Length: 342
Image (cartoon, rainbow, N blue to C red; front, side, top):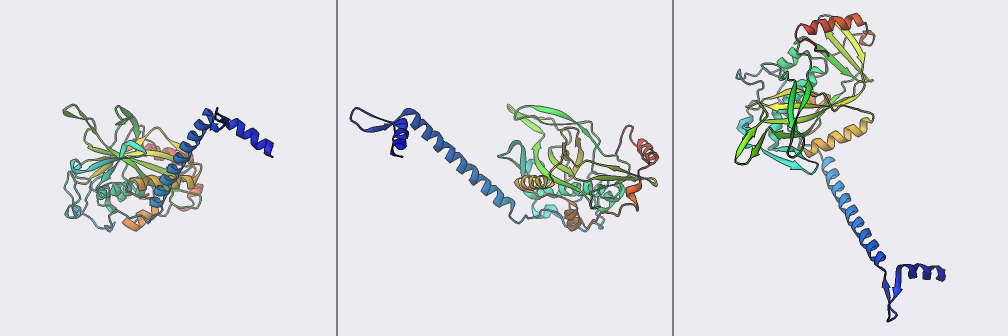
């Protein structure tokens, strides 16, 4: 044992001319590297602890609690009514908002004050409602919009990185006011959840001037749509068709107009990701939504905030797989928009 220890000691140190042991150069370097790794690991652990302590804290809702059946009066130019929001000091001029970077993204930022998200949440509620068996017209009326809070666009410009922009193709849902759909999981439950992934201004300061590239939308927000349904039921004009579905994550874009009004600009055609781990997806939604001063939006949130329950799907919807019914629905949608498919 003493011989082994002496061999290790001789490998790590040497005796100088005075007979004192000195560490070899590689021993010093190895020690420094180990120290740096220890410090880095400690910092990573601390950051994770701080993040998870915030995520696991009781979330504070910033949602409106307006009764869903109440009809609100709005100015014709707006698509949303926020009640007495401005009386509580929440600015509706986006120039008065503060957009702050997070440590995970410089492009997609947190909006302050958080009450700004109230208008966005109401449009998210509309998107959830039309996934839960409300026709476009019913969801619009129930939530007090004067028109459907969506725009039909071919592409939307978003930041590619800190300096460059890119135009991404987007698709949109069929706008037929009577078209109805259900996104249902294996337990016959609503299975769509949304979560905020940050926002950005659609203008850039170049030298001493401001270049605006977002059109009518001064701020745009990116929102995850996790559609964890296994089936989609479509209904239009008395025709019903059910198709199977693969759980997918998509990325939606919502633009701010004015006076608290947000509209759905479309769903990015890419990327789209298959969801294979439901718990992992739920954890990611919660973490990111919390980082952006928000919360996940799902069927339970829609019921608690706007008192909208999923509409019951048609009886025996599992057997409604006739391709002729599907074609009849597509024919009905084509009257409104050539090429649109559910």
